[in-house]
Length: 375
Image (cartoon, rainbow, N blue to C red; front, side, top):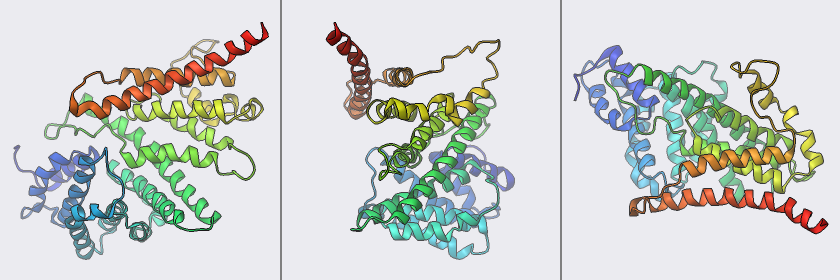
């Protein structure tokens, strides 16, 4: 273990571990935080509660769903976070982080009412201060996601449809998605900076380049919900298509979230194939897309009188481009090893590639079938 840190150096190391989601390193640093005259004693309960919660989520990530039984594993974290609230009532920063972590803890414990209550007690919508760390940005993005998913679970138990709840749920997911996009952008910058100037003490955590299951699910959920927002008027809403494009143009040039990019590309292709007429597509075409226009303007390395990149001009071209992007990302990540511990990941990666190839086959087969019938 490296030499003991304290004061500003310890604070910087704690921020680095939290931002990188390097919980293994945080377990070591926590001992220094709890030591006498560390200068961070007031953060000890918060950090230990966070460590227990995030380690549990990390270890269960492939199978984790909200379940009351999860609370048995998180009881100690709950106690530590409650203690943090009591001892640091005057610190807005500690109270907000603690409330957001409690909301996350209660969500995964299937205590949706308490999850929502803690998000509201954190006074997120009233917070006017900028995010000082990546961790703070991620916690707030996850908190809106937690509130949205919790409201969905509670609404599912009600017999009547409540439009007010649907609007609130969509607001939470949209807010979470906006913050998640900002988080991915800042995370990419942080990872690039770390690769150029490696930290002398901390090494990048295994999860540093991961968005996290909550935010990934939110980024997939927002376009789907927006597509169905006006379900009483029409089948698909153009704003849902625009959300797909917004997320993908934000992720497209980043190493973070490539698996999400692969899934979203395939999903939008499916929407354009099955759920949108050519006349509806013209209203939401790439020429009218604010996200695509904004992205193309930022591509300053393209020069000359002609575009040096491919921009689809029809629904078919956009579908083909999306499926080819999805195919490249899915086939590159196919796991060929037959090791037992990789069996689940191998099955999932092959399934992703197969779904894309099936859609490509279907897309190419339809024009050929029509041509054969005409002949």
